[in-house]
Length: 418
Image (cartoon, rainbow, N blue to C red; front, top):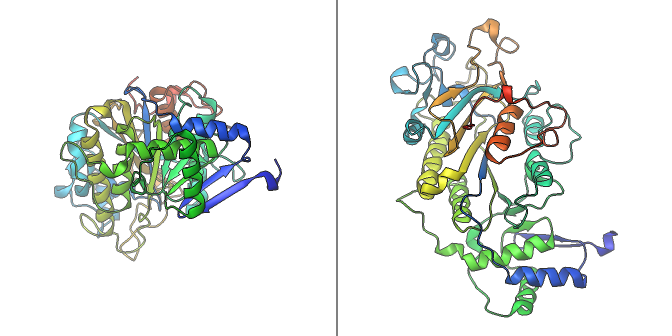
């Protein structure tokens, strides 16, 4: 397709990519404007949250049973009496207290000493490797979630199969499989057109060129038009969280609320992605209070509200947190931590093998640290992500999702009930 045949429209936060406004495309888009499918409740759903900036796993899932933790962090260690104990060895940061009921219900697990085998301490490179699923390879053109969607077509019957919340598609969803990025669901549902299919299509084109702030980015015109029409019928402005759920203010809380909206709207979501920054705590990190505690508080409140809001629907949902690397074991001279290696990740949901800290703990002894300074990695992130894809989403061939890595079920940390 030549450049002259390619259409790119971006206005007011909406962008659609089209391979040309030919009659076949117009006919399919008109069909999309009239179709609204009810998808079954029991579709497995994966929600990925990226903690950009490298979360301090040692202060998130605290090894309070190891005296070296307190020796190496005299100013920023979470006091043992304030840690929410999990198993006598590890505990939650007190700001994550809202998650303790999920732990007790065995719907939450933590994986410690997990990360990328690549030794980079560059945020840009490490995030890229984690999203492409190819540590150390910078030339990978697509993300591992997109590759999963491309090779597993069972649920490829809705424009909402893979959705990211933000102004653009993240690397993890980049690729040839269709995906959406939604900046703000509240931009939809303001007007619900009642015209016939052709008039709806005309109205959609008018909105694009008039700069209507729809806040949606689609990788093809067909998905874009179908998504616009389906969202307008769902009318997100009328949504109210269920079961008394209260999401925290801020980007993460808003993203989790909107993911819950789409799940409960039954538009066919299988994969949802959101990210949140603020985890690069080089200076004044804090202990039970402070900079990191504020970010963890938002995370704990958001995840707890999400689980409460979904209620019984959580039986089909897994939430996976990730971060590009961890922090140094020893605090620095600015009461913070520097870029490290392994970190901790959380897995939450009905299918989760919860109530336990998973992964082999290497300890904090300097002799066992990576390069003498960092928590060593004992679980390759691809083994954790691969387990979630295989045991939750039913992926049959992980070699196409994580090229160059032999995903061995015997290396799965055990995060999902078999």
